[in-house]
Image (cartoon, rainbow, N blue to C red; front, side, top):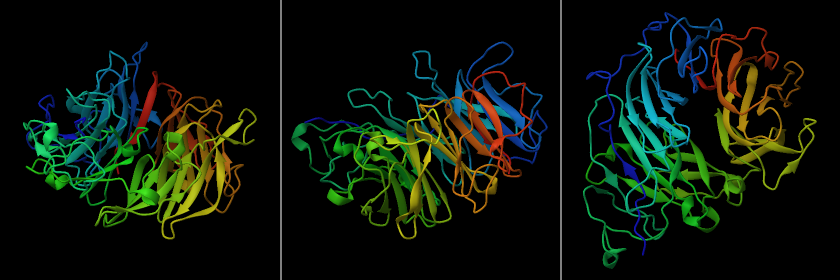
Length: 467
């Protein structure tokens, strides 16, 4: 019977160099060396000519590059997350090659400098920060684990610099709802004690690829992947127990009509008693995309409500927007060069029902979505079949530019969309696409006349860091 490691958690590895013993300072209303008051960070993952890999600083109030060198953040910096208190920006650098540095950098926003870094054991596509900005959770599904299946979750303290134990959990077993996690060093049990408390052996160990965190920070959900039915489990982590002798990690999969189907994300209600889970379904190797309630007071799954496709979602009040590409492919004629479409679905969380009919958008794998000014919903994809992977949905009751109410605009800019950032104080949205930064006017759903022309490189993600 196979014994596997299902979850690994640790706080602040030794390779992290803290900025100071007292943690990180909050923003003071202005940048460090740049002197800018309203800043956007943009990651560039190549060095070419006069352009250096790093995090570039832009004046987001005037659309001008700051007169300061980029912040060093690994060889190929890409995905970023800003902490809720806006004091830090977390940056991952990694490209999946043998030369990938897999560096996770912590930038002080006030100082506009790298305060420390961690070398992760593999690539990550998902990391989240606790609401109090004290800890980061990082999913590393390809991390090698000696003698076990790959996949870990790293938990890094962003405040104390303290180190705690490494936690290992037994393999997922659908017959045991609350396996006991054991602090290392604890030898793995022999087969003779499998399924005897506190050991649970056997089963299939899915790597965890995506994470979601609640509003209060009392739950972190880790979503598994894989073709095996057991890979549809969700690990419900209780952060307050991390670092204790018996950290609480509960595995939920549902069963029969309540089984999850390749979950990828969740939205939490205000008190974190309910998580609305988004199931990817067919597009991720399963059967049916859906939205499904998970009761976090009892860790029980509700009945899934089918939707056409869903790999990314955004919630505005009680309305959830879900984007994905249905399988089998749906034919459409929204652009002359397109033979298949993605679909945008509007879903009411209060009634747990689909609202109206799906709207055709660009196809591809959708993994970026943001709501800009004037009710314009920006949806980005990668590997789409047409030249451009950006769709802009008009959620207003009046036309925006040439886009009617409930209609979709398809900007012609080419390439994968890798970052979307609405500028909160203005009616523009920054979009990184095909390695370039485009600035869109939400009054026209088109590129504005002023663009930043002195950005040289391959730009991946964009985030505003000031309130």
